[in-house]
Image 1 (cartoon, rainbow, N blue to C red):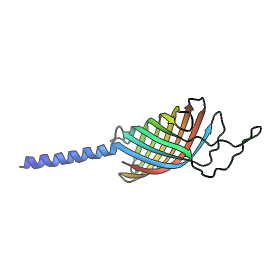
Image 2 (image 1 turned 135 degrees about the horizontal axis):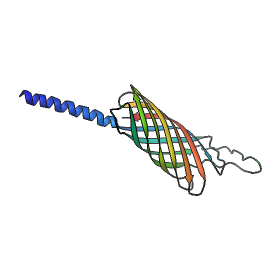
Image 3 (image 1 turned 90 degrees about the vertical axis):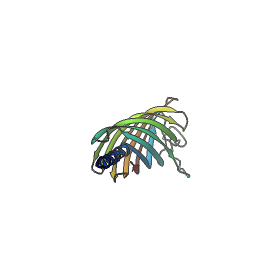
Image 4 (image 1 turned 60 degrees about the horizontal axis):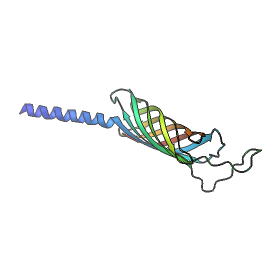
Length: 184
Protein backbone atom coordinates (compact mmCIF):
# COMPACT_ATOMS: atom_id res chain seq x y z
CA UNK A 1 0.00 0.00 0.00
CA UNK A 2 2.81 2.43 0.84
CA UNK A 3 4.37 1.75 -2.53
CA UNK A 4 1.11 2.77 -4.27
CA UNK A 5 0.92 5.98 -2.27
CA UNK A 6 4.60 6.76 -2.86
CA UNK A 7 4.20 6.03 -6.59
CA UNK A 8 1.11 8.30 -6.70
CA UNK A 9 2.93 11.20 -4.96
CA UNK A 10 5.95 10.87 -7.28
CA UNK A 11 3.69 10.70 -10.36
CA UNK A 12 1.73 13.83 -9.31
CA UNK A 13 4.93 15.74 -8.45
CA UNK A 14 6.49 14.79 -11.81
CA UNK A 15 3.36 15.75 -13.73
CA UNK A 16 3.18 19.12 -11.93
CA UNK A 17 6.84 19.78 -12.68
CA UNK A 18 6.46 18.85 -16.37
CA UNK A 19 3.31 20.98 -16.67
CA UNK A 20 5.12 23.97 -15.16
CA UNK A 21 7.99 23.54 -17.61
CA UNK A 22 5.66 23.13 -20.60
CA UNK A 23 3.69 26.31 -19.81
CA UNK A 24 6.94 28.16 -19.22
CA UNK A 25 8.12 27.32 -22.75
CA UNK A 26 5.39 29.16 -24.69
CA UNK A 27 4.44 32.81 -24.48
CA UNK A 28 2.06 35.03 -26.43
CA UNK A 29 2.69 38.79 -26.70
CA UNK A 30 0.03 41.22 -27.92
CA UNK A 31 1.23 44.82 -28.33
CA UNK A 32 0.12 48.07 -29.96
CA UNK A 33 1.60 51.55 -30.27
CA UNK A 34 2.72 54.43 -32.49
CA UNK A 35 4.89 53.85 -35.56
CA UNK A 36 7.04 55.92 -37.90
CA UNK A 37 8.19 55.07 -41.39
CA UNK A 38 10.36 56.32 -44.21
CA UNK A 39 11.20 55.30 -47.74
CA UNK A 40 14.37 55.23 -49.80
CA UNK A 41 13.00 56.35 -53.17
CA UNK A 42 10.08 58.44 -51.98
CA UNK A 43 9.41 60.82 -49.13
CA UNK A 44 6.34 59.85 -47.10
CA UNK A 45 4.12 61.59 -44.57
CA UNK A 46 3.99 59.33 -41.54
CA UNK A 47 3.03 61.52 -38.60
CA UNK A 48 0.12 59.39 -37.38
CA UNK A 49 1.11 55.76 -37.79
CA UNK A 50 0.06 52.89 -35.54
CA UNK A 51 1.43 49.37 -35.27
CA UNK A 52 0.33 46.13 -33.68
CA UNK A 53 2.06 42.81 -33.19
CA UNK A 54 1.26 39.30 -31.99
CA UNK A 55 4.28 37.13 -31.19
CA UNK A 56 4.04 33.45 -30.31
CA UNK A 57 7.41 32.45 -28.83
CA UNK A 58 8.95 29.14 -27.85
CA UNK A 59 11.69 29.20 -25.21
CA UNK A 60 13.99 26.33 -26.15
CA UNK A 61 15.56 25.84 -22.70
CA UNK A 62 13.05 26.98 -20.03
CA UNK A 63 15.31 25.88 -17.17
CA UNK A 64 18.10 28.37 -18.05
CA UNK A 65 18.29 32.07 -17.16
CA UNK A 66 19.55 32.87 -20.68
CA UNK A 67 17.97 30.81 -23.43
CA UNK A 68 17.40 30.81 -27.20
CA UNK A 69 13.93 31.76 -28.45
CA UNK A 70 12.13 30.89 -31.70
CA UNK A 71 8.99 32.86 -32.57
CA UNK A 72 6.28 33.49 -35.12
CA UNK A 73 5.52 37.20 -35.54
CA UNK A 74 2.32 38.54 -37.14
CA UNK A 75 1.57 42.23 -37.26
CA UNK A 76 0.95 45.33 -39.23
CA UNK A 77 1.28 49.06 -39.36
CA UNK A 78 -0.69 51.83 -40.94
CA UNK A 79 -1.84 55.39 -40.81
CA UNK A 80 -5.27 55.87 -39.30
CA UNK A 81 -5.90 59.60 -39.62
CA UNK A 82 -9.39 60.28 -40.97
CA UNK A 83 -8.69 63.99 -41.61
CA UNK A 84 -5.13 63.91 -42.90
CA UNK A 85 -3.41 67.25 -43.30
CA UNK A 86 -1.34 67.81 -46.42
CA UNK A 87 2.40 67.73 -45.80
CA UNK A 88 3.70 69.85 -48.67
CA UNK A 89 6.60 68.42 -50.68
CA UNK A 90 9.75 70.57 -50.77
CA UNK A 91 10.51 72.52 -53.98
CA UNK A 92 10.80 71.87 -56.89
CA UNK A 93 8.03 69.29 -56.32
CA UNK A 94 4.43 70.30 -55.82
CA UNK A 95 1.56 68.70 -53.99
CA UNK A 96 1.37 66.61 -50.83
CA UNK A 97 3.59 63.84 -49.58
CA UNK A 98 1.86 60.47 -49.94
CA UNK A 99 0.96 58.70 -46.71
CA UNK A 100 3.31 55.93 -45.62
CA UNK A 101 1.93 52.60 -46.92
CA UNK A 102 -0.06 50.37 -44.59
CA UNK A 103 1.02 46.75 -44.60
CA UNK A 104 0.96 43.51 -42.65
CA UNK A 105 3.72 41.00 -42.12
CA UNK A 106 4.43 37.41 -41.17
CA UNK A 107 7.89 36.71 -39.78
CA UNK A 108 9.90 33.87 -38.33
CA UNK A 109 12.29 35.33 -35.80
CA UNK A 110 14.83 33.96 -33.39
CA UNK A 111 17.02 35.32 -30.67
CA UNK A 112 17.75 35.22 -26.99
CA UNK A 113 15.84 35.81 -23.77
CA UNK A 114 17.20 36.71 -20.33
CA UNK A 115 15.02 35.98 -17.29
CA UNK A 116 15.74 37.40 -13.86
CA UNK A 117 13.06 37.19 -11.14
CA UNK A 118 9.99 38.96 -12.57
CA UNK A 119 11.84 40.61 -15.51
CA UNK A 120 12.30 39.19 -19.04
CA UNK A 121 14.45 40.83 -21.72
CA UNK A 122 14.37 39.65 -25.36
CA UNK A 123 16.20 40.39 -28.56
CA UNK A 124 14.73 38.77 -31.72
CA UNK A 125 15.50 39.14 -35.41
CA UNK A 126 14.68 37.32 -38.62
CA UNK A 127 13.10 37.37 -42.08
CA UNK A 128 9.52 38.44 -42.80
CA UNK A 129 7.08 38.63 -45.71
CA UNK A 130 5.25 41.96 -46.13
CA UNK A 131 1.91 42.48 -47.94
CA UNK A 132 -0.22 45.55 -48.55
CA UNK A 133 0.14 49.22 -49.39
CA UNK A 134 1.12 48.53 -52.98
CA UNK A 135 3.78 46.00 -53.87
CA UNK A 136 4.62 43.09 -51.59
CA UNK A 137 8.13 42.52 -50.34
CA UNK A 138 10.59 40.62 -48.25
CA UNK A 139 12.54 42.07 -45.38
CA UNK A 140 14.00 41.78 -41.95
CA UNK A 141 12.54 42.44 -38.57
CA UNK A 142 14.12 43.24 -35.20
CA UNK A 143 12.31 43.18 -31.85
CA UNK A 144 13.69 44.34 -28.52
CA UNK A 145 11.35 43.98 -25.57
CA UNK A 146 11.13 43.81 -21.83
CA UNK A 147 8.40 42.31 -19.67
CA UNK A 148 7.62 42.79 -16.00
CA UNK A 149 4.89 40.98 -14.15
CA UNK A 150 3.65 37.78 -12.66
CA UNK A 151 4.28 34.12 -13.47
CA UNK A 152 1.66 33.88 -16.23
CA UNK A 153 0.86 37.52 -17.09
CA UNK A 154 3.29 40.38 -17.70
CA UNK A 155 3.29 43.90 -19.09
CA UNK A 156 5.46 44.29 -22.21
CA UNK A 157 7.25 47.30 -23.70
CA UNK A 158 8.75 46.71 -27.16
CA UNK A 159 10.80 48.57 -29.75
CA UNK A 160 10.38 47.06 -33.22
CA UNK A 161 11.95 47.80 -36.56
CA UNK A 162 11.29 46.49 -40.07
CA UNK A 163 13.33 46.91 -43.22
CA UNK A 164 11.23 46.02 -46.27
CA UNK A 165 12.55 45.57 -49.82
CA UNK A 166 9.44 45.80 -51.98
CA UNK A 167 9.33 44.01 -55.31
CA UNK A 168 8.95 47.38 -57.11
CA UNK A 169 12.46 48.38 -55.95
CA UNK A 170 11.40 50.66 -53.09
CA UNK A 171 12.85 50.14 -49.61
CA UNK A 172 10.84 51.02 -46.52
CA UNK A 173 12.01 51.38 -42.93
CA UNK A 174 9.37 51.22 -40.19
CA UNK A 175 9.87 51.71 -36.46
CA UNK A 176 7.42 51.37 -33.58
CA UNK A 177 7.22 51.68 -29.82
CA UNK A 178 4.56 49.31 -28.46
CA UNK A 179 2.98 48.36 -25.14
CA UNK A 180 0.94 45.29 -24.33
CA UNK A 181 0.61 42.02 -22.46
CA UNK A 182 2.47 38.71 -22.36
CA UNK A 183 0.68 35.50 -21.46
CA UNK A 184 2.93 32.57 -20.54
